[in-house]
Image 1 (cartoon, helix red, strand yellow):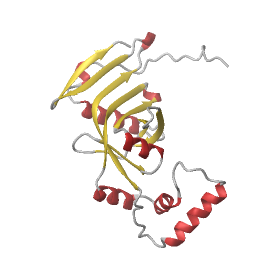
Image 2 (cartoon, one colour; image 1 turned 180 degrees about the horizontal axis):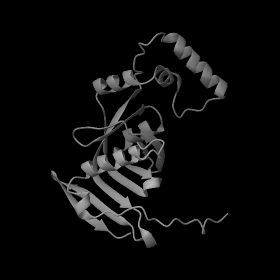
Image 3 (tube, helix red, strand yellow; image 1 turned 45 degrees about the vertical axis):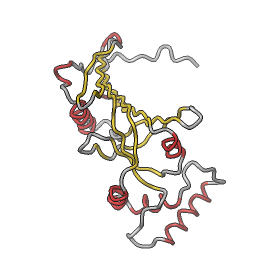
Image 4 (cartoon, helix red, strand yellow; image 1 turned 180 degrees about the vertical axis):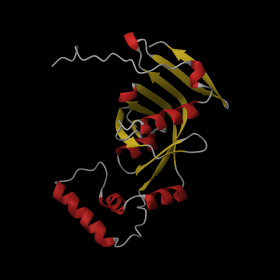
Length: 213
């Protein structure tokens, strides 16, 4: 099946150096707030996380951004024993992509990743719905399982083992913080002459370059 005729005429906006400013974190926060306020995007904080395993093979999946901290790092939480966690342990260089289709906008981020503190993990874990906290205990992420029924049985067992609201953080579960070294903002334009502004971190400063589409 060919997709040659599937085309979109981008026409929603533009991105100039003046409008972008000197700090990509400020621009990112403005863009994600616009995405959240649009009412047209179910999860504007959804991002593709790309990792590379010890064998050099890349993999990617969707995760949810939970915070941009005071240092400009991008934070998410997950099971650290799943495939992504094992690949992060093997290679701390990762990439993120945000895609907000109704706004015709994309943000690409490259950087290095470290684990969040136990305190930060505990604070976030306590804010999750109880079912999500129990689910963190129930799932051996990325491991094979015989059936959906078996997964539900694991959930029921975890639920029985941790009654009430005081559900502790599993020892294999936690957060990651990505410190960006490069951030690119993409705004769709007519004729495929898209705006691409790329920020790279040089010392304590960001350097801005316009890229050809």
